[in-house]
Length: 220
Image (cartoon, rainbow, N blue to C red):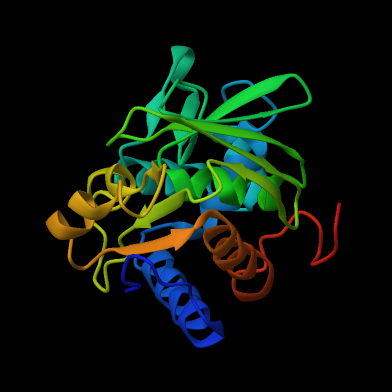
């Protein structure tokens, strides 16, 4: 965990990468994550049959796995949200005229890597009410406003029963480390990273640890 006012070094970033990978692997059916994101990234609900065909799993296995999560469903039993969602949340990612949403701040910082798209992330600091805007490509953060914005995260080292309540609801963009102080006090197991650090952590996770990058480790 980084203390407010500090910057992550290479060792701290690598530790955060390992923690994030370990947490992902505690999520049942984590293999579905990049496929769900890419299919929903097209901007429309996804049928279970299509997801199963994309992943290469039997349909019933996909259904059973999704039942273990707070997945969001639309009409005709189609999936509309699992990490990436078509329904508005405080964290949105806009690219090519399309707007998608994330269950947490870190989700939106991984979307450019998973989708291979550049765009604009927008959120609101829950402590100050100030808007936070981040311009990203698939391999870097171009700008963050406010410049001192940080991302909060928790990474449980146990089986994740409900990814939204156990992880996602605690992941925010804060306008500064000072604005995040009360969150860190309430969540002493949590981590704070700059926007650039959090992006780099999730880029490494997606590209090098999980093999999920849409770009194959190169800029899209």
